[in-house]
Image (cartoon, rainbow, N blue to C red):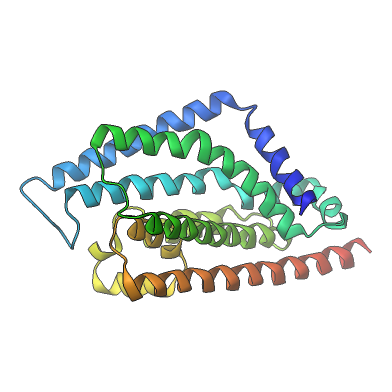
Length: 265
């Protein structure tokens, strides 16, 4: 565990050196969140509730979902793995006395802790102060929300890790990355709007894909749309996807390792 903590610490320290990038990302994120918030305020003019969301509920949903989306912009695991493969550094990584998947996860966590502390938390505080959004009803809701965010993060990491490992076989993975992360994920994660607003056939598609477990489930939990048996079922769905995708990522990188050994002698 100590060696993986060292990878996280090093990644966290490395991100501290890019202060200008930090402030620019924060400013851009806040701008886009403001646009979305005022857009929804305008759409709710003369409406008290839509699909179970009142104005305060939908603004809370938008702020939380936009904040969670920040992980997508800062994780960059697929591109990091591809760069290592192209530079030949991955051969050294695979020979280290550490698990490559867990090492990559530890590095991602270090970067994401920086994102959480210096980007996500300031945005949430700012928007809660400005728009007077409601807080979760109980400490249990907060605890379950944190658990849900962690599971969603593992799912996002696993998807990016699998895409990154595909670079062992493909010359360029950007097309797959764009399709999965900027296409399918953006459409079915609940980032643009709650999945309750989707047409029935798109909602059905979202139910069988892992992307709603990244943003929609933790956000709906936080905003009070998930409760009781639906909440428990949603957490179990997240856990199942996290296990399956982590296992699939392990299978992929072990196959890649065998490919590397065969080609390298």
